[in-house]
Length: 92
Image (cartoon, rainbow, N blue to C red; front, side, top):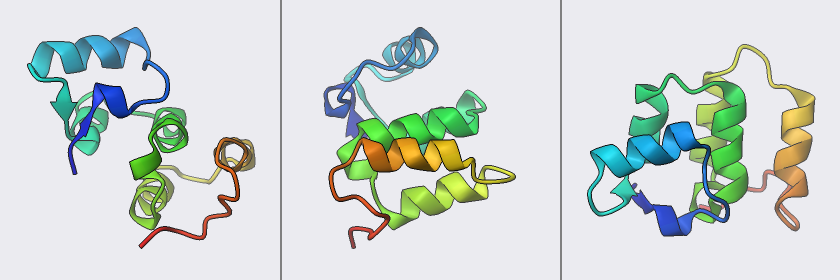
């Protein structure tokens, strides 16, 4: 699934923004490819879930869980906080 920089509710940190600008001419990119290229940590994956509506899916939450040793309850609270009614009842 490709997304555009314009799909983001907030601009990512310079590390990600610069990488996307440098490697994707049209601003459209595969988020997993970018995360893996930059060795993303759990907080960066959760940021994407919080700020990109189309990434608020079971697939992305599973990706988050698979790439963290333990699920930080504070991160889960942040994800829930940023999405009205989002209680991990995933979109299909």
